[in-house]
Image (cartoon, rainbow over all chains, first blue to last red; front, side):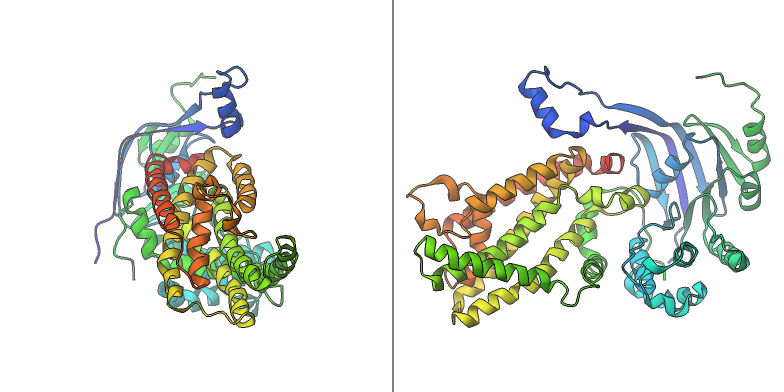
Length: 256
Length: 267
């Protein structure tokens, strides 16, 4: 069964609540209530307007790059798409299986063996046990870790851990792929093999949303781009135009 | 190969069903947790069983002298009660910090929060399974056979389990927002251990005492312990636990519906 994958966002806004230390204490709250706010009164939770009024519609074949400065809302938008953050307002409708590679080293259990970690990560990423078992041999072969896979991950070098994580994530079948920066293994000898696997992985996905600070990455992998500034979309369209708008803003932003 | 499509509309109503259906996931992860936690020790989770057995035997022999009670009555009562208590208190104790301990996952991937709950509950069940050895030891040593009343442990235990699940959901949601709930809970559980009839008999209380009647923990322990000792739990325990279940289930449902979407921001 293959349903058409799509992403539809309309007027999405997201306020990020800043829950400070005073807000985190139940005792403070009760004390405040008991003393009529004399001892503690910190009722307001301030928010950051992380995303404001974003509309976007993507269909199969779209590979969109998210560009913008740090804190512009790229990662937040990815997290909304991944279903981690619920929007404050607006509509998000997504069809298809989502795989996000926001943090590939996530969920490594240091005491578990490499093979066990492949299973754990696969399950957490949303695969079924049978599905992971089917892919286990292929993943294990790709990592080239051999007998190390039967040893606990805590003794691995960081390069070995990354390799394991990379191999597992890229074994997933996704309709929609969400990436925060391009993933890699950082291992020179392994680089070429990893790049090939990554492009196969990306080609299997019907829609890609990729946030990156690198123009060359965006130019290489994307056929569309979206520029975010202070949580708003300021440019949207083909890659060249959006990157142009990013680097040479016609209207100078003088907000503090 | 791809699962029959996921419309990733965030829908809390289906979280419970989806979590239950993902049993292969949380049961495996729970086993894995136990396996890795005790990998470097020879007898693994039986360490808990061993220390619990020592605790029961020591406390049982001292208190049987203190209370001038028959050790063959007190020790089985205390051991089975303590095994039940450890499961209950252990499950409740980790709930307020449950999401905080899993913050890495919650912040980086779409995860059904109830799967995290079931994983924790399953972990507790595995430990409980190990501790049943103590119950078995008590049966053999004191030649106790619970008989038909023993079967009542099934409905009783299910009632306790449902209670723990719903109280746990409520605790975990509040615990993310108010970080001192964990300390408060630990405190209450510590007090609870002394005011719950575990190492003393409820019959020692004066008639009409509220200490047991208003203590849901006492009802939970009674529902598990009495059948295993071969008699029926108090009617008050069934009623008390059912009332607690209704109250906590409603609270859990309301809290989860209202706040589960905020948890990724709070952790």
